[in-house]
Length: 466
Image (tube, rainbow, N blue to C red; front, side, top):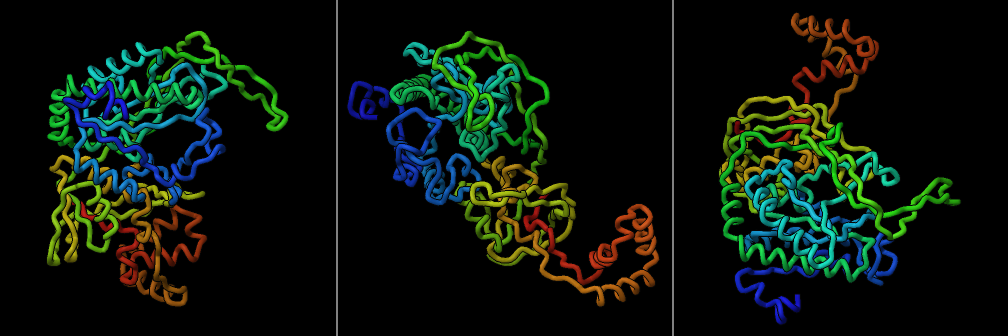
């Protein structure tokens, strides 16, 4: 940074503006010590991965819980970067690459911003790789092994969702590079590799920035009818990757009682290993708009923090929308993820009806540059939706009930007065022996069909304008 601002590299900013955030995770920077990063070689003191709220900022791009992330989103909206670089250090196995990086759409994989991805593949990646190689570095894609003890099992395709920087950037149509310097390379080598990458990035923007801006504008104009919103690894390899491994030795650990790996630091012969990819698990239809009730002020503030455009109504309004009931929603077991209990929406039941929206509610149109982001955040089936991040967990809590002494006579009257209901009940008894043998389940079946049931239980409160 000193060289670029005051020294021999000042010419790099003659045609490019560089906005540099030296410390994103201030809390982690201040919590420095020699024992923070056992998988990393140097420096003598290292920062802490998470913030004082124990949040990993590179999992926070969608939910924006951290004040640091709110500040970063605000900065991005003020300066509108053509290129966003997110610099990290890896964990994991040893290999020859010292500077690894990725972006959505690398090697023709899916990208929500296909024009940007083509620019990154055609201009950015070849130039950056060449610059790194000229300076003695070995660039490569990110590395995730199925089994670090056996490379023949292949390299997995990691399903990056927009909680991560480069996937978020792709969704908001900002060229974004996730950089992972290799943790087992010397600290000086990692710093110099980052130096070369930033320098090459600035040169590419100076020479081809106009083309990148045109690609960005083209992606901002796109309005895809469907959006993939969940990912899984492919069952079969998508191809073969020419991989540069390191030598390793096996030893028996008295502590673990198993064979463990010792990395020697010496290069091993190149190997062609299976490379897996990812595939979508769900594609979401793009509606015209979403209606978020005023009662969900936390959700509205997150949408505002992202710069998503919306209209706020100043008087109550009845709107005709689709509502989703989520009878199969499940809160994840185990410890929370990034300070929240994750939720799987399951298969929704869609109900078209008139919904009353109070004053202060907002209408979020999807015909806007950030419309893709709005869909991913507001459709509960999205893997990184605000629903999945636990912003709507209150709808899963049942607060009213009826005792058996109330339900039994009520259910008997319902059976006697409604022949269609009786036929439905008898069919359920015949089809489900466990249900037939469970008195409580039988009474709850009637409660769910009575006038006393909570009509908003499991009802996702965001209206969908088809």
